[in-house]
Amino acid sequence: MDIFNGHLVLFLNNKGSPSICSINLPINIDFEKQLEIDDLNPWFFPLPSNMCTVTPGSNHDFMNTVYRVVLSSPVMPDLLVDYDMSNKIFSIVQQEDVTNISTIAVEYCSQNHDCDTNKALNISSYEKEKGASNNEIHEWKDFSKKYSCEEKEVVSHDGTRIPLTILFSRSTYEKGQSPGLLHGYGAYGEVLDKSWCSDRLSLLDRGWMFAFADVRGGTGADPSWHRSGRGLKKLNSINDFVSCGEYLINEGFVHKNQLSALGISAGCLLVGAAINMHPQLFRAAILKVPFLDVLNTLLDSNLPLTTLDYEEFGNPQEQSFFEYIRKYSPYDNIRPGLCYPSMLVSASFNDSRVGIWEAAKWVAKIRDTACSSCSSSVILQTNISGGHFREGGRFASCKETAYDYAFLLKVIEATKNKT
Image 1: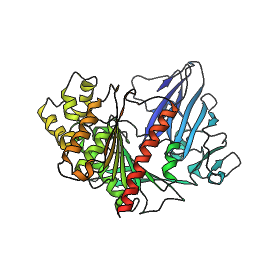
Image 2: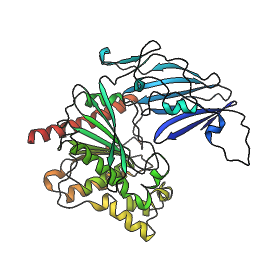
Image 3: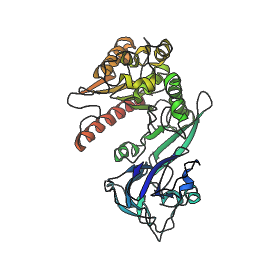
Image 4: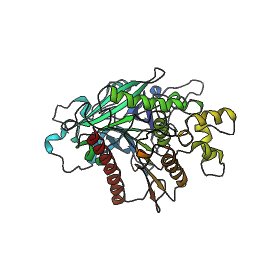
């Protein structure tokens, strides 16, 4: 929510899809009657599609009537848009430039171009019902001609349908033969970031598939989605992730021996637990600043975030939570003698959120207890100067991504050679 002198801006969740609207101020409120948003005559900002992410821009002027946001999707580079809340019109300020892609692959949309409804800043049926207006359409671009982005639903272990977003190149991807990378988070009610990332193009153009699993514990259609994946229901998140991985293989979206997993911070709990349960499901995994030693961390109340995490994972000083967390805590459930996938585990020395020892303990135990032939492929990468969000700067980020992708390519190439 943002508030200005003459307008209130609300960020909404419409059945799992983002929506944003403005309401004129002041508001005449009847305190004896409960009001819905629709009763306040909102203006819903036109959005390109229900797959885009909406991020507030720099909106520091309290007297301003123009609200700036950044719109993005897996196939649409970041788009800076100004919404005039007084006149109910919008204008596109600029869009991130992407080089080394043929102009043939770019879909342009302008006021005089008949665009597909999924490729234009048109008004969705929901927004039409709620009073959105679209006075003009400005030129912008996406890469949906070159890269396909599909939304699927995966049936989890208990019948719940899990949203799964699949991204691949139309020219290089081969269904059933291509490698893939499955990403998940599923904690704190956070949204899984599916915005545009030019770094992905390196793997997409090599035929890789990316998949984003919106498992329980993250953001969903309503708050119950988060509640059903935390505390004494955390195993739902892990089973959802496993179901998504099995779906990708069974439906032929990836080669059965070439699926990798990606977890970041609390998302590593998801990946680590899934690997313990089904070590043969993944060929490689990248665990970044990983939260893996869940039980021991939550038992140490001297750590900065421990007591705050009781709301998300539960307090293991209570027997019911102790026994439940013990079932899935990745570090405590490493299975001896089994073949684990190749792993790149990265940690930061100055990380105040997740201790560097969690990654070190996980790698040491895997090497010590897993089969001798695969334990050598578990790599620990330590950043001595960075924190939880790693080192800042564009070049440091590029170097980190290049290392990650080189690891994945090497592992998958070795898998191909064996088969």
